[in-house]
Length: 524
Ligand code: BG6
Image 1 (tube, rainbow, N blue to C red):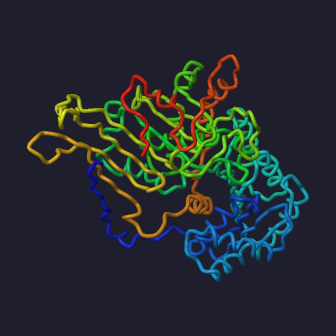
Image 2 (tube, protein in one colour):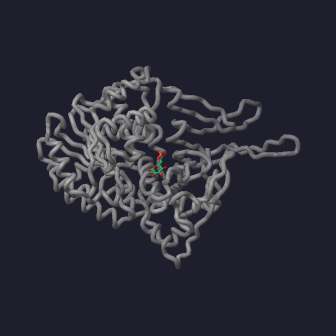
Image 3 (cartoon, rainbow, N blue to C red):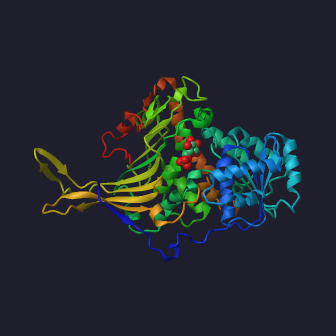
């Protein structure tokens, strides 16, 4: 094991682990479509509760959960109180949760029913109860994005951008299932709303450790000069998960697959942040312009590139620890015989001045060895290998040599950043070994990191779209993924679907993406 040197932050105003938080100033009404759904219960209401508990919400706030089921305000609040208690990050008491729930109303309506939207509009007109600024959160199946935005406009629930009050519409993923459908959806939405009113969510951007990538890169002088093709050998992004298709997720997942579900959005975003040029500032457009430029520079894969540089695979049955798990094709609500991929690994190239010729390896999968999201930047070896020594013990000899420097952003879990570098092992010989500088959040900051949805809801409520996807960004990401989806569909292309055992790091074919190059996947 390499020696580890821990790093502790030294900034005095954050000694207590708490920097004064941002607050939402504008009173507002937040309408959640899909108000009885899983995301509302597990993420959105607990996030709003945490903001309320930490005094970050305005005094006048009303939350309206729009759903199809029968509830009264009281029965809905009661049920949500127990959900918030189980999923909250902060440690609020029952009384705290109950006080927050007083801000929630339930509204029974249909997502494609004009009469429901007219009724909602009349109800929200009561400005005494419902503050006039409005957030509409579309936590609904993608087939409802079109109808709900249309009805919001037709029932005058959304204002024009020049109105005295503001309205914002948050759209959950997936935003389209290919380039064409994403373009159609953008056209539809932008016919009704101004881009400044649209917030397309990618929850990875709300993660504290993801935002830290930009501070790490652009608040330090020592790393940026070596972040380019002269010094970097390759970059890897991994988002592996141990979960399979629990709670009936298979029904959705099988219509998407790992490429659409994770790579087109979360993983591409991570790649953008680690490779983009410095923005001119932190305005939402300055940051998003740079991300779009990187996406536009990624080489669009041709059929042969898909064959050589992209691996798709599916998990078979097996064991994870001492738990038996079924094959993907036998999972609940997954059609048997499906060829949807639960794993994808790909090698991409960014054809721009900074990254020309540097391979970018990306992978994601379900039922893998460990839940791990990380980005590693592997540097080139020094130009001359001065430190290659042969060490012998008994009859066994090993070649000891300096290992390349590796910088790792641990997005989750065990959040932190580490840098591997060579040091001399104390002895009479000149032998180098690998050491590690490590910064980790748990040791440096008290309490838990804010949930991604807290940060993102805060930004919507404050009108900051930096961490949301702009229309051109979504389309640029689809433009890269589309040829892969098409190649997989083309029978004559005969692109194999590989298989892997649960608990593994994917199929062997994914390791072979490194063929002829230095390096291998970092499976920490
Ligand atoms: C979602 C995907 O967007 O992200 C899921 O639809 C995936 O399939 C999830 O499990 C992973 O998110 P996190 O924050 O747990 O890494």
